[in-house]
Length: 234
Image 1 (cartoon, rainbow, N blue to C red):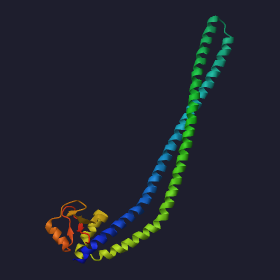
Image 2: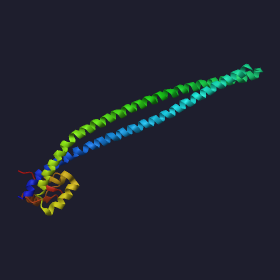
Image 3: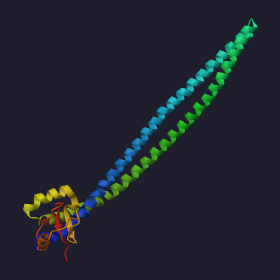
Image 4: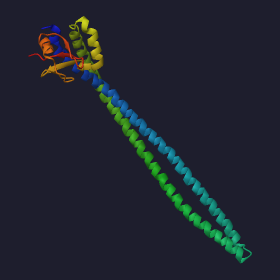
């Protein structure tokens, strides 16, 4: 049996272990990036709440100023009422005062509602700030966990890469370019086991002649998916 084909099962295992370790190394920074995006989103939401709160306060202040203006107007009308020269003038001014008092009553309700919205806006910002702080704590915790495991994972990756390099030295030079292309395209699944006369990557059935050649130790590529096939050692 060709030496290369005898090494393929073990080589495949090393590829799979290395891919798993690399995924763990990549997962940490991705988790942190995701958490940072969520924090940024929360900050944007907080900033939007602050803008809205400013608008609510302006609206409440505007209504308060309007109320003060109306109250001054009523006081002025009250003075004119006391100096009315005729019953008709008295009735006109009285009607105006009554209308302005009614308008002020409505305005007071609107001011109370506006102030309630301001209070709600302040609470929403407080909640948003707490959510941002909690997210910052989560980011720091994740960064600490990722950094704590990074050195060990990098050491594992280096060991597996060295093992893989030893296996790769046994690949015929005529196949190396093709092997590299398969690794780039499929990663650890560049190699595929034949089980029950089928490729375990694409489930294509191995032809009888191909099975004979595999048993003889010849390096074979799957006709369907192009991966390097092997059979487990018996």
